[in-house]
Image (cartoon, rainbow, N blue to C red; front, side, top):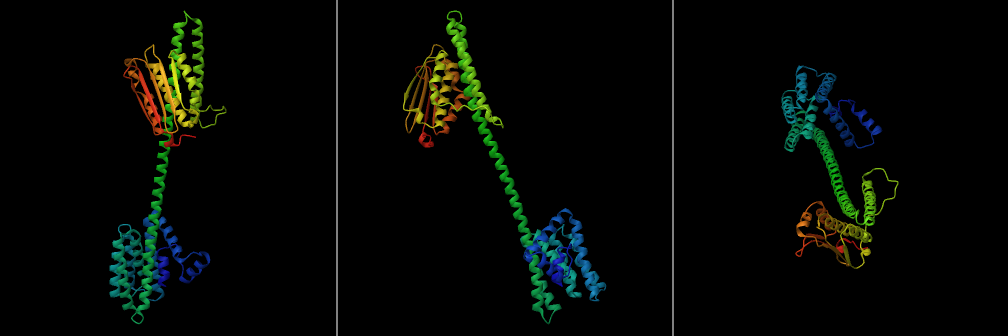
Length: 424
């Protein structure tokens, strides 16, 4: 009877007799009894969180009602029994204030009952309070409550069943153990759920942060590409336009050629900008994309600069086509930026020289010009040099840029392809 009382006391929504409960559990719930009880108690906990006082009041009234019915059935319904029934059930309403306070008051009432009256079904309030302490109290409070209940079980077995105290003590100890284990089990499940939610939130934050970092890196890459394209082509176009203006009266043919080069350079810059900005669109482009520039276009770059009025020579050592595409793009962009700075900052007349060495273990690029130090000092800072250094660092290299002792400007790039697996 007490076993049925405990099963129903923590779940007032399923107040059924013990024999029907066992049969129904075997037929409708093939899971073990502990899992079934834990599930019912967890659902009750969720309902209790939504309506805390109503649930506590329902548990209190249900326990009291069962006890009154039991006393009436056994013809023991008197004033003392009703007083102790109320004294055992009413403290259940203190659960939200403090679980250990609720248990302590009930334990004191149970002690008075042990001294003055006979047992009744309302004693299940002790097990309910123990369950709440195990669920919401500290470890020390749970241990103290468990020890108190165990002491009470011994006292009850000796006082109320002197002929078979061991049998009663084992039964009461089993009920107390079930209440404590159920509370600890649900508490651990709550802690596990909270940790999983925290982990999910942290992983979501890290995913968003990685997305933001990737977007920032992509924006930086696009900004470098845009700077290289716009700065170089605009510098070439400005130089060609100035040359065409000066040559318009004396040599109209050269002015017309320069104008045509301005047009061609502008169209090429527009195509490169469209290709680069196309990666920002979500929809796929219907036009084929042009591949990234490689060292195969180095001659074309030198021809543009030479047409803009800066004679350029080049020394080549090794085969640049053996380098990976990423290394070729880096070397090309550094050469482009260095020659663009020469176009923008070097005083006329000036000459430029490009030396490229492609060895299996090292790639070196040196771009020099003969412009005056005063004129090229403006090129010592800005986004261009910063972008070149970032490109060099990508392949474990380094970049040096500064004025030459004999006048002019020098840009020196050194890469280590083998360190990054850049050779094909």
